[in-house]
Length: 509
Image (cartoon, rainbow, N blue to C red; front, side, top):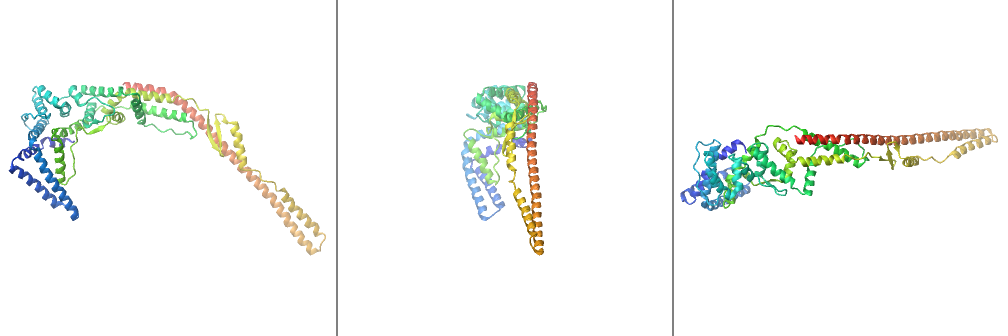
């Protein structure tokens, strides 16, 4: 809630609500209230837009809300003293904030309603009088709400009241919005050193009391929030343990940087404002008997005014589980909550750091594997395994087999040419010329086949050589990758203890 909104709430005419409730028993004042609601209905009808069906539906909804609102006001006729108490409390708070010139008289007591003695106590504290008796009465009726009123209004930052407002914590129990606001305001230093120490002690007790399973879950949450640089430059065939070790080294370095990052000294005022923003909901919620009716009246007024229901923030709204909020604060940007969370989680952060350091302590991998020509080849520091290299050579050879010999085809062409030439000697000249030409053609084909076979053999050798070179290149790349991985592992093993020492020093400061 902004400062202007808080001031508007302090000086708002809640006394008018009180007079309306009291005047229900008086016919004339009751008619005045109904006339006001009727004017609101007529005003809304004049503003209605849309189809006839939509306008009629809205009008019926508003009329039903108007009728129900009248009935609920009648039910509140017996709570006019409680409404007067809330009005007086607002006036006391307005005087403390400098919004009104005079401190109002203390309200009369309302049977069982904690706010009546709390308002008297706050007025006495404002005057500088002894408020012990009124505070005792208010705390006896509702210690949590009394403590929240004192802390939210700034009337008391005594650890006693802070402790009542910020109770003992359970890992599986949601914090209320008020407890979270007290937590943040104390972390930012707005409630004093005593409140800060009390909140820190409650949070530390929660963490120290965790069982093994919950403690491991908290450590995983902390580890998951570490934003480390991804491990790059390793092949997919790299040893999983080695990759995990490099990842742990990177995360440990990121954790060290997180711990060494400077924390701003100035506490923002937003946390104080957020705490005060819950005060209207605490004061206006009403007694146990009327609280539900007051909330319903606010909803019905919103329907009649044709506006969205914007309920006041309630102090007991759930705000999250304490362990999750601790982890969020630890890696957040708010300086106060971050410093407090780092203080509370120091032992758990160190445990995460030590676990990461232990993960870096792995031996160098002896080999890596790479698939070449559908063959799995184990690559070591000195090169491929001999057996795998032999199998790879066979696989490459099988892809480019030696073609069957065709030498008999070449000799057949030359033999045919020779027969034709011999035949040309025994036939007339005309036939001899033809036979000689055919013999020459056969001889040309034979020569061409010789050159074609030689080209095919040369092409096969070229492909075979290229496949061998590619295989050798892949093996060499994998060998270099293995050497680089071993180098990086050695660096990670050397750097991890240094990072852990720096982490301890940063958390101890």
